[in-house]
Image (cartoon, rainbow, N blue to C red):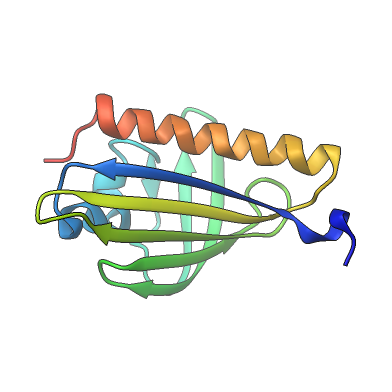
Amino acid sequence: MSDSNKGIPVTVRERILKPIAVVFDAVVDPAKMSHYFISRASGSMKSGPVTWEFGDLGAKVTLNVLEVEKDERIVRESKAPGQPTRSMIQFASEGEEATVVRVTERSYAFTPAGVKLAWRVLLRIWRVSCCWNHRHRLK
């Protein structure tokens, strides 16, 4: 396989000072997620399709949720950045009062356009992380 076909994974890791059940719930519950990422959603992150709305961007994105393992991981696919991508959100306890969340977006082409798109996604994820930790603390 040539380098241009391998793709670029984008991974962001964040440590959150809340128990894993609280953090997981804040990702699957659209009412809670609306405090730091989306404006609204068609439903919670369960297997099947869900539509997220981003009021600040005037955009809607339909995701296909492939796997949900409570307090462990969520796997979803979308075409949000203009090409099919698979994302995995992994949750790991760090003691009783902290959780490590790792988000990996996959399948960005190893081309100038793919690298640019991977950086845009990485910056969007980073922005969410900053909001989560500084402006909209989990309750």
